[in-house]
Length: 107
Image (cartoon, rainbow, N blue to C red):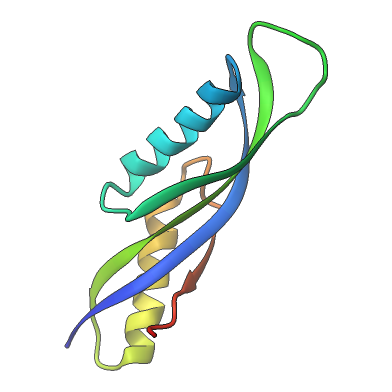
């Protein structure tokens, strides 16, 4: 059977950027590249890692991403597992591979 499983993920990443807006933009752009069909990519917090002022600074960015994954499975439980596996696999090898994924309950 075909299922559409709503998932969301959250995490943080440390990166070098030219400023707060550049750090935020990098995270949004890279996540959208890895998951073009994401419904939303929300940057929750951007913080400097060091107080020293430089041209390129280190930032910690907290983010949340959500969307729906189409999967084929025998049961709803199997569909949830398949969706989470798909998302983990999609982000492996990227700076976002430690995202914590969860299935969003259907209201």
